[in-house]
Image 1: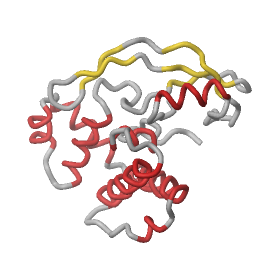
Image 2 (image 1 turned 90 degrees about the vertical axis):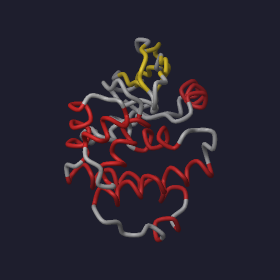
Image 3 (image 1 turned 180 degrees about the horizontal axis):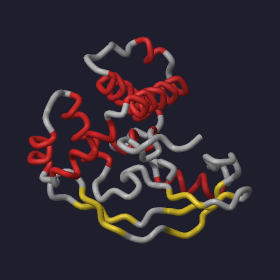
Amino acid sequence: MIGIADPEQAETDLSAGSLRCPGCAGALRPWGHARARTVRDLGATTVALRPRRARCDACRSTHVLPAVVAPRRVDTTAVIGAAVQASAAGTGYRRIAAELDRPLSTVRRWIRAVRDPTHVAWLRAQAVAWIARVDRDVISGLAPQHSALADALTALAAAAVTLRGRIVPHVRPWTVIGQITNGRLVGPPAPS
């Protein structure tokens, strides 16, 4: 999956061949849509999706393009992000599950997945790389936090704010973070 914060711009970029395959850097072209599905957002809200698919001209692999939702998840990046953020602040998974009205096992799985030290380092690296593309001065303003996960979330928040301020002001912050992490906020980093 490739995280795309702005679907309208993605359509334009796909048609122009300016989106690149993460595997081989070949040009991606429109290739239909993934199946329609409904995912849970914050509160009792749901989001209906029919994600755009793209196919690489060079390696022929296919990719799905949304950032509002992570692959194989039934909750939006905003819901998962709220759980991760609460966990980084010291809230237990039982309380988080109750506050978000999600199953205990689901929230516990998110928290366990995001606490892997390798993944936390990858999240921070992704955020810093995106910040460096837009405004290197923001990196020097990142204050150390009480944990590596809190450091990574601070960097992701700074990257989202920077990108929203300069490139995609109409896109929700957690959707931008979904793009930064290629939909892998709580999953393992994408293979290189």
